[in-house]
Amino acid sequence: MASRVAVIGAGPCGLAQLHAFEEARKQGAEVPEITCFEKQSDWGGLWNYTWRTGLDEHGDPVHGSQYRYLWSNGPKECLEFADYTFDEHFGQPIPSFPPREVLYDYITGRAKKSNVRQLIQFDTVVRWISYDEETGKFAVTVETRGDARTRTEEFDKVIVATGHFSTPNTPSFEGFGRFPGRIMHSHDFRDAQEFAGQRLLVIGSSYSAEDIALQARKYGADSVTISYRNEPMGFPWPAGIEEVALLTNVDGNTAHFADGTMRDVDAIVLCTGYQHSFGFISGELRLRTRNVLYPDNLYKGVFWLDNPGLMYLGMQDQYYTFTMFDAQAWYARDYVLGRISLPPRADMAADIAHWRDRLAACADPFDEIEFQADYMMDLYKDVDYPSYDVDLTRAHFRAWEHDKEASIIGYRDRSFSSPCTGTVAPVHHTPWWQALDDSMATFLGGQE
Ligand code: FAD
Ligand code: NAP
Ligand code: MG
Image (cartoon, rainbow, N blue to C red):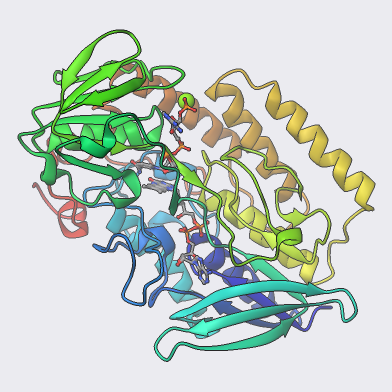
């Protein structure tokens, strides 16, 4: 069994990993020494909101991409920890689409209960990871940020849980250099009120484009134009939001689109996604992928094919989040504890190829939901994660897709039942489109 394990990052994935080891230890297993390095001064990853953008107080890129008034974009019942239910945490049933602060409280609630904070070294950034063929160990160089000191430690296994929605993918368009208004990436978006009274252009056709367009309009933008590259989202947008073809150029503050239309706009938000960025990992160990449901070279979506002592958590595109991270964390743990052994390299490669072929055959979000649920089930079958009704979450996600098509401003007002406890979520006291206060106190308490 490994004697020293490094976990990089204390976001939802890293915390799931620490918790998984703690659970085994509590049940009497012998667990190696676990050390988690977290560059921020607190846990929660993206859910740990920061007002900062650009570089942080130490000159490193700001990790946070979440913004004020962010609400869950999927039913909470589809991400409920099977071993720490919403009922257990809140002591009362809560609506299905909580705001950020509420989910932050939930994630960190389980981490507090299992007392994993002691395993985390905060304000400690991993600068370099390499592998020594001779010793069979990983060298991890970290920098403590207060004093800017570096040191290198040896580990038998390394688990990378640094997320992949923090390094923006930022295309440019002709005329941007002379645009008179603000241009930013969604990574730097913090407060929709900034665009009140303005005509906003949003570029992209995925979750960030959808939500930032709605946010901006909800908090007072005059109009929002969404420009898509491949396909429009096609939701029934409320008045004041419209989708058009891809931006070709801007001339002054006039935006020109591929379909020949034009609009005058005051500001532009690029919702053009993120890059998987692992500048701190030696080239031969570094995952290179786009945002897909099954990145290449990761056996079971976790183990680096050429060196499975290196594991990556949460590197998939995500319908499922916290429960998928748990499945991966339990699997990684059981490999580290020697309870699961991995097959020969050729078999691992064949298994990856099988999943990637199946992914290539997915035609729409409904296929993708089944794909990711099946992937999770494939992990669950080998570990002792508590069972819950995964099929119910598939049905919830299908209903959610239909709800969004029926009403993009109303889908967050629906309620779902828990796959763990059966609890049916109450309807929130204020429709999402009217709910301007996203605090936990208002969400859990009375009327707005
Ligand atoms: P992260 O949350 O990104 O955490 C990674 C951690 O690693 C961070 O704490 C970071 O500081 C640390 N780290 C990074 N590099 C280093 C380093 N070199 N050294 C040390 N530490 C490092 N999911 C949902 O389920 N529901 C939602 O509504 C939802 N909304 C989202 C909204 C936005 C705008 C974004 C961008 C994502 C959203 N997500 C949502 C998806 C999100 O990816 C997951 O919920 C979750 O945060 C992923 O967890 P993670 O641990 O993989 O990564
Ligand atoms: P994403 O899902 O990876 O989507 C990236 C988008 O950028 C795609 O629509 C892509 O277009 C577009 N794009 C990329 N390059 C482009 C270019 N050169 N020109 C035009 N368009 C380009 O990233 P995301 O939307 O930022 O979502 C990231 C994560 O954050 C998701 O997990 C999401 O669930 C989460 N999120 C949640 C909320 C919430 O409300 N809770 C809000 C925002 C984000 P094509 O489709 O044409 O390829
Ligand atoms: Mg798309």
